[in-house]
Image 1 (cartoon, helix red, strand yellow):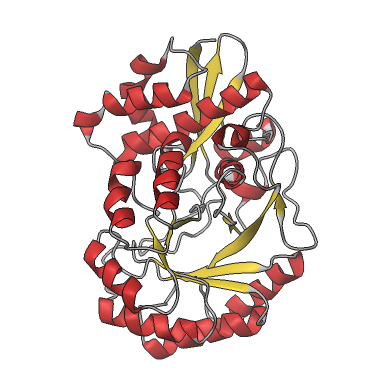
Image 2: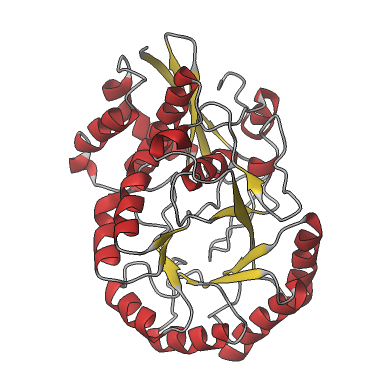
Length: 376
């Protein structure tokens, strides 16, 4: 089975805010779907966390390496792409685009074998996983109302992030966390994301250490992106001083970037994003290294239904991956599949058992959000 064509669809019109300094507008494209077509008639779907313009430009480089290749060897083909684009700069749009291609190739492999792809990564260790409802911080009354609404929908775990946290005062930081804990009660899981990958992040190591002790008072499960993403020494110091687990790494790409953070003990939890880091093939290598060093893997997932479905498949195969991120209020997660995501009474999501990444997409909904009529 050979690769014959690659099509893309940039999602626009309902893009949620991202919390960034230069805030996203609904028409901004930061999520792009990738479809790999084959001479056997099967189509694999992936996704990329970058704009359709950058994906399209990257494909001008990658297509000559892909067209005519086998569709049944995702890891070898993806590594071929990495190896032959090294001089263009590891990371960035090329690596992000390879991520979407790699996911689509694994989706195809699962469809050919009629198996959910998690089965190939170590077996299905679990059939359900806990999603945490991920939302941006807001003024306390607004944030509390949003959290209570999500609680009523059945979520048992939550993460609040960005907003004014770490950007005004320690008193404001505590007000936000206290308000969230009051809204969800003491029995629910709560994590906090400072958003240290924001432009010109000013959160210092001293602030982060002090904030971590405040978070411990509210039984926060982890403290995410408290420092600038590249601050290896700072994270090592913070982890030693913090009473709560420290997490990060969502912006890193390829396993080589993760190695020092894992081997030097910078994090309790690392959070690679499968639609950025190089795809499933890279994510698995990162996960294996993390598990060997006693570090938990919890995927970053502020993206699309493709990312969520892929994270669920990966969570089925790794012992310590017991959460997935659920970007709440995002039509690109909730409104492009043929079946809705459903929480059970315990707030768990069932891991799809269908072939490939395990879900089907609605072509009309994809057209609605992209204008593309023939992606699949």
